[in-house]
Length: 192
Ligand SMILES: Cc1cc2nc3c(=O)[nH]c(=O)nc-3n(C[C@H](O)[C@H](O)[C@H](O)COP(=O)(O)O)c2cc1C
Image (tube, rainbow, N blue to C red; front, side, top):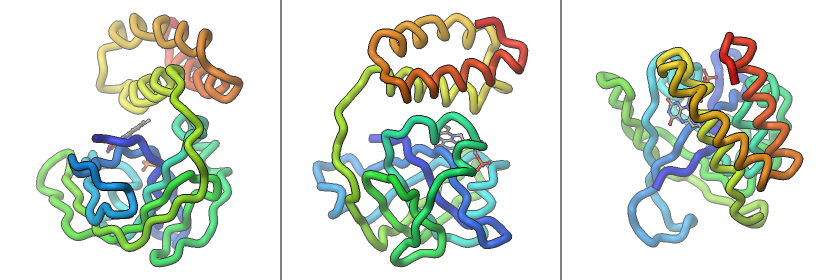
């Protein structure tokens, strides 16, 4: 299973950097505290890729605050707290975190496969329930992060469907997140 997370890494200035990245969990029924290894597929060219390749430590932050998945400026304002075992900080309002160090980084492929060893797991918040709008916002956020390599028409044709789901089932946060993604694409010349 892939969970969409906000990954903390450390940049060359020693500051914590946050970015949305999918974390691949082992296909088992292990509870999260028993998971020993995690995997990522990282495309070359991102700050996260460079940071993790250089420093080899990070934090997987699981959060239902969708605003973190929408804009870099929002992530830049996020509150962080010290981690227990690694240098990159945790997201202050994460529900669950895994702190990790890199075991292997196969940089010869794109995306690179990165295997990490879990150093510490903590649960900080409770499960807030499933909402269809979360899925729609996440799909839209992935598309926005790859808009330059996806066919423009395919993006435009999917947008109305996601908008409808967000309108019907989303709360204020989901609607704000979707509006930010829409504005982002409109600024880039999309007709939505
Ligand atoms: C929900 C979501 C999941 C993503 N998962 C991945 C991923 O697994 N691997 C990856 O390389 N990029 C992924 N991305 C794209 C990165 O977040 C994107 O390239 C981002 O610009 C990297 O930021 P950075 O340059 O600040 O590290 C994902 C984006 C979103 C919105």
